[in-house]
Amino acid sequence: MHAFEAETRFAERANTIVQQQDISVEEMRREYRHIAQQYSVLLNEVMKITRVSDATQTELRRTRKELFVALQQAEIQRSTAEHLNDQKTEILSIAAHDLKNPLASIMGLVDILRSRITDNNDSKEILDVIYDAAERMLGLIQNILSNSAIDLGKIQPTFADCDFLSVLAEVILANTTRSQQKQQNVSFNNETTSACIVNGDMQLLYELCDNIISNAIKYSPVGSNITINLTFVQKENKATHHDQKYIQFDVIDQGPGLSEDDKTKLFGYFQRLSAKPTGGESSNGLGLAVAKRITEIHEGEIWAESKKDEGIPGTTFFVTIPLKEQ
Image 1 (cartoon, rainbow, N blue to C red):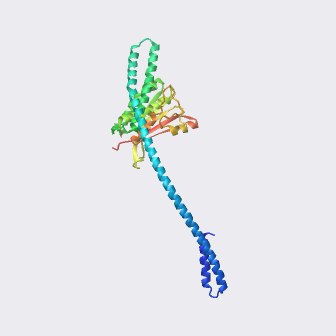
Image 2: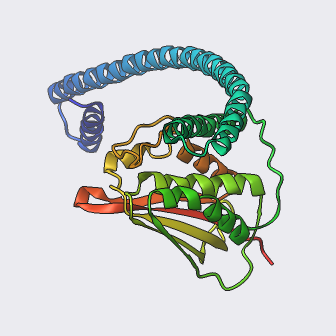
Image 3: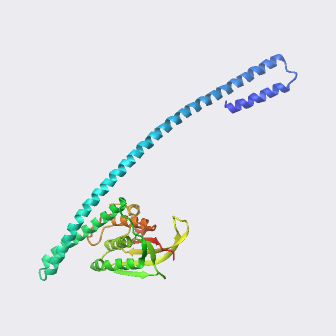
């Protein structure tokens, strides 16, 4: 019998006895024994609840202590992991920096030799291979250095008024040779109606645009089309929760597209996706990760849309950066 039920019946029985004025002694004894039994049940229930409560409190105290110890150990492990990660990043940065200058020297010397060769096609092809390999390695090193600098907090962005349109146009021009080598048609649509001034670091914004556009060239087939659009959008600023005007540029390629699994790894470090470069280019899995970090530094957003799993090729990358309020 539940304690509450026993208590209720106990009260009802006692009230009945009080109201009966002509009750006999035997009946009174009977009622008393019955009430005593009910009281005993009630007392047992109360004692049982008390024992359970005491045991529960003891278990809670033990669990709280174990949780506190576990949290302390987790904090120590987190601090150790952060320290080791900083050391790893520092070593990687030093190694990349030490490789950068020799590679640049190799490219310079190869360039001199190529300018002096006029009739030996075999030699020129060999020098071209050396130059391209060195250029790819230099690009990888640059990405490693950028990522390391961001991770170690060594990049202190110099924010100033930047004309995003000028930066983007310069990047498109710098990538012309690469796209022409793959016979790709790159078209640029400027749909902005006023100045594209953002508060940003011009060098970092250049690297952001270059990583996105060069990625489209790398994964698009020979002879395909790449479209770059620049426009204004109005949306909520996640930091201020107010509507704000953004500059948005998107890059549309005709590559193989991204699977759902690819999308989960797209902006991670050293991730290998299902798509492969179409011109034998190297892929180190750092460019898009660096692009995401730079976008976040400028309080912007970056994402990609693709429907490869539906049999539709191509990928569109979107980047939004807040416009400076005029």
